[in-house]
Length: 75
Image (cartoon, rainbow, N blue to C red; front, side, top):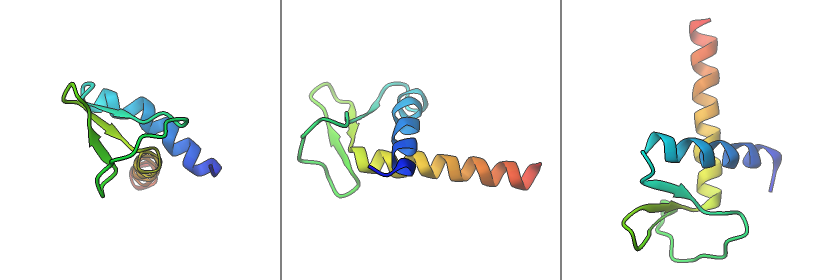
């Protein structure tokens, strides 16, 4: 896993459950789960969603990119 993807994954693992009030969780790195849709999500038995690791990395990087753009634009 590249360092940028690891940063994005860690960010998404912390932020996604907070933003979605626990409805979305991120797949653990060591998990070998399959059956995710093309967006990288899978519905859990309790009705919550699990986000696939690589997709979580991209989501986390997107959050950091938006934060940097916001800081540069309004600083």
